[in-house]
Length: 337
Image (cartoon, rainbow, N blue to C red):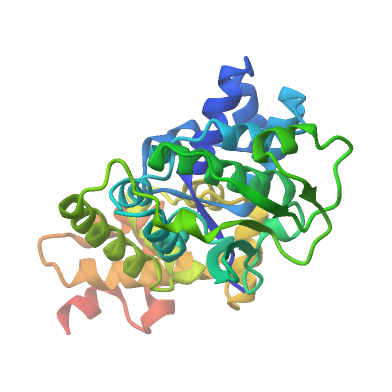
């Protein structure tokens, strides 16, 4: 079963908020297993395991049990990248919800946001995706509360009007004190419900977005659609590991620790994923070295000695033995064929 991935933008949003509360960010990174360099790439995604640790540590280090609510309350649309720019240029609030539903996967593969109209009310659900490995199934409170608080905040940013929430429901268990929930949503909050849902009057769908621009919407949506198409091309961990090995195999062997760090997963998780695909890191390393060896030997400009070095062999004789095991012939005979 594949694992839900999440945009690095979510990590950045959490980190920026807790930093403003005086938390030592390096301490937070270390505790959550985050490489600060990840935040430099806006297209990076992280595993649920990383995000789960981050939420836990952020709550612990701030001492804020309502951290998700407060991060959502401070939300800015730029935090979700291209999706935010699409929403900023929609014409109406109804179109905002349609585009949000369409492009949620670009920042979170762990939830699906959709809405319907029933008897004059909009029911907007934040459904936890269940057909993937998803940390939200175990610890939904902070991220789900943050999502709905962010929706209320974004609505006001987009339309200049506060969303008149009629009802809000959460699947997770009741909290000890729901005073902050009532302050932010300005309605009675229900817990242990069948779905995560926010309900408001259907008239709100006609609200105009203040920054609407059809020309820019077309540009941003075209980019978002291309990103979504690229993301939905499924890629196995075996393939991703092979790609990373090939990129880093230049004179020395990349370790599983380095590849796991590059893929932003733990070593144990990477090993589990490869096991479910009936392979291992060592097997992929061996196969990748073989493929690269065949490619290099087809280039007469690269000596056999250099091929051995590029593939991380300590000496040419070790490469000769490995190549004969792979192909049944020596590198020299293969090149002369």
